Length: 94
Image (cartoon, rainbow, N blue to C red):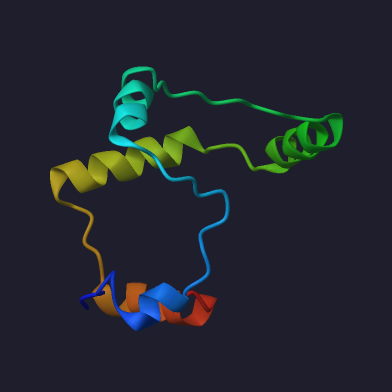
């Protein structure tokens, strides 16, 4: 889809919130001093909720994981596409 910037429809659009015109001189200064930043905010409620979720997550049955990994690597494990599709369909994720 092509959008004509100077069309009558484009001129009727509301201006972007917080948009400020930038001159090429200001743009060069902004680009040279731009840096990435991130912040992390947490509160006790979210930390407690995440802790509770982690504590209620079942442990990994490493023996089963290792046995299955070995079966896949050796070629013994064969995936039945029909059973996989049926399980996905019945779980409601389809």
